[in-house]
Length: 232
Image (tube, rainbow, N blue to C red; front, top):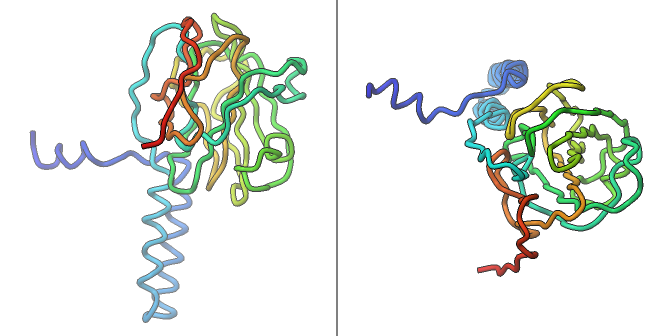
């Protein structure tokens, strides 16, 4: 393997949505460096951070039927039973919900939790509260997708955060998606909620780190009881 090929192997791709922000950060760094040379060098960390934020690493998604994968990188902040967003028309029966909080250092690409057809996509304007708060699920700006799978509908909700100001969705209603396929992006800090079909049992714990498109949140074909965990 050549040196160039070796270097490329370790370079993480950047999502095209980040190109404009990187250019803007470079121009700002150039301007400040010209205006105030003494501190201008500090601003060169900004384009590096922006490029880091918009990184889009490849992921290896397991394909076993019934697996539900994490739709985002981040910390699992809450696991409980809640009714899905009212705008989706799925009723008010509580479902198992797993919430994943993304800080500004996490990969912000959203991935499909399971293979299936997108039945519905609903965008709802709202506030920009701290995404780690429970009421953010109802009060914040959000974009919700219903994915019809062989084991029932799975709801995935992109929620804007305190400094997030743009939710992007790359897919449309009626599309068929494979497990782990990219479907969206939330800029600069956010949260992603996933509502699971009846009978689902979480295979993860609150506080655990999840990797989008790789971490298995639950197995809809398994009869395994709720797992117990310890912090080491």
